[in-house]
Amino acid sequence: MTSPRPTKIMGRSIPDWQARLALWSSGGVVRLDRDTVAGWRVDDRARVLLTEVGLPSFGYFRPGPQRAGEPVCPPYYLLGREPVGNHPHGASLDPDCGCGHVGISAVDGAVRQLFRGRDPLPVNSDVTLFFYFLDKVGGSLPTERDFADRVRERKAVRRAEAVMRRLVHRDPILTSGAESFWGYLFARPWG
Image (cartoon, rainbow, N blue to C red; front, top):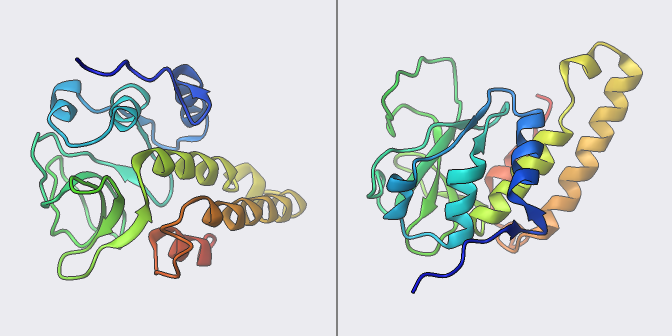
């Protein structure tokens, strides 16, 4: 017997998650195919977030999920990447392109950033926290409109920095003192 599909995740309904992420996503939202995710070793909440809500795009994260049922970079299922440098990306997923790919571990469900030849950087303890962080960070970053006015820009930057400081304490993987994706992002959000 399968467990019932979650209707709320972190106190939010699925339509609320969809609306919030679509509101600020700079490049749309990418939903994964149910058949692809069906074979992944992830929990039900992660499955719903990936297939019904979708991965949002913002300046530091570009969704580009794998379409295979088995981990492309064992033990990680790839979700997207942090763009590094100015090199083109085709339709195919290339884990060796030089970008920091973000993946879910099939072993423990943690989300990590992967660079070939280096140890993975922690991103979040699980997919639910990854979506929570994406929403809070993506929704708080200054917009082009904010940068057009100095006063509005300063207020937007202060608001985003306050959000970033509070978020670090939400996930034990980040408060352990280890270097992390968010730690690097929080140290350089405007640079």
